[in-house]
Image 1 (cartoon, protein in one colour):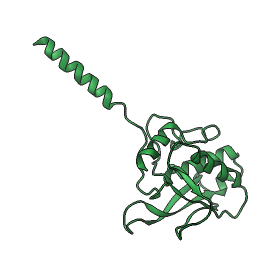
Image 2 (cartoon, protein in one colour):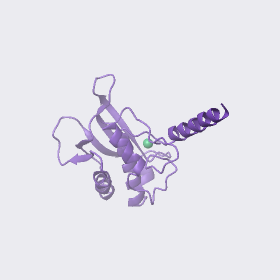
Image 3 (cartoon, helix red, strand yellow):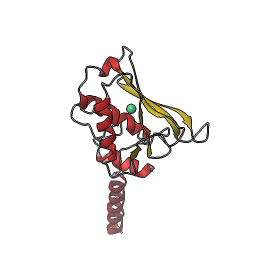
Image 4 (cartoon, helix red, strand yellow):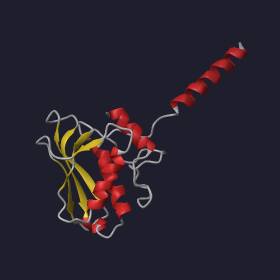
Length: 175
Ligand SMILES: [Zn+2]
């Protein structure tokens, strides 16, 4: 009888440790409906050109369904624009149309870059920010627990400039 109880406890501990191996990535429901689109650079400055190009490559080079079309093939807008506002926001992702009008994933979005924060930043820093915002477009939410992730606010934006394994796993689950 005692042996059975011990076996049961060991089994429970084993199962608990298995369920403990969870992925950190979390779902963001207003990502784009498909993992490829044309990303139009509508910034009024050339400051971000290098970072935008390298951010697209950083995502394209992952083992995910992600890629970027070279020109618009639909009337759906997906763009990057800049603005300037004196606060701590680097950038934000703004969905503006949804698959089923009131719900579903986004079919139209704009990524806004804040000149106030980014005009004097390094290209690495800008890339970290743009790769992060594109993460939202690929259905990744902010601040997944534990794992290194481009979606974490506490990442080093000078050194973490490409999607991490947890980000890649998330995108592969969602597309
Ligand atoms: Zn974010």
